[in-house]
Length: 303
Image: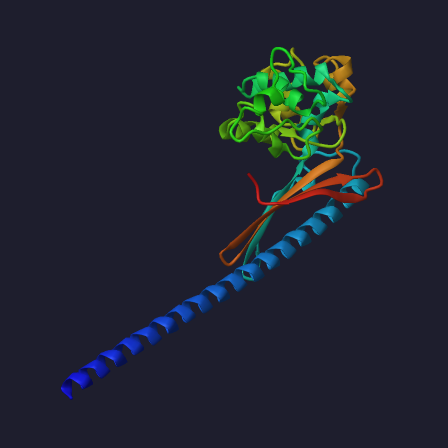
């Protein structure tokens, strides 16, 4: 009898432990489901906030064109957005003039490499302390043929031997992150180069009112660091008063024709945090001559 009571007690304890284990597992799964649901809700909410910031910037850029014929770093759009509180978190971001950078798609004109743009890209790389051979490698990545440029080039014959193998784009670049895949490019080099380059559709000029110092130095072989320092001081926050007179003695006539005082392409980078969820969002805008501002590229996250 006592033995039977002992077996019954042990069985009851095992059943109790089993039920408790199952209950704990169900409670844990339920908590995870709730957490997943909250994260998804917060992510959707953050995405909507980011889209709201996009609409706000479109309005600012439209108004800017009505108020001024030039674009410079003293305008409202160029003011960095400080952290603004929202329900459960904050949002902050900035707008950048993309035509203050070198457009890598200028490297190829139709089916041919543009030698003047290639030379400018080499000068930009040298100004940043980066190996200038990346200019030729980038041009080969974009041009439509499979002929390796001399002396600095790379086509499918090289990339197909990589692990994993891949091929060159052989077309204009849609996003500058593609350059992370070119031969020899590492993260440190890419991070150093990225603020000075952009991938825009078609051939674009450079807005000298917003150009980075390295891009200014890349405009001519004769441009010195002292010239760049003087130019940056001269333009200050309001831009140059006379671009032609300022640059005519510093750059070649064909380069002078490519210099601009206003811009067509801008990029919004915004970060939204709600609870523990953070969403990073960027939009590239193209602004038409009548002030219509259209998003042409959107992306979440960054490399």
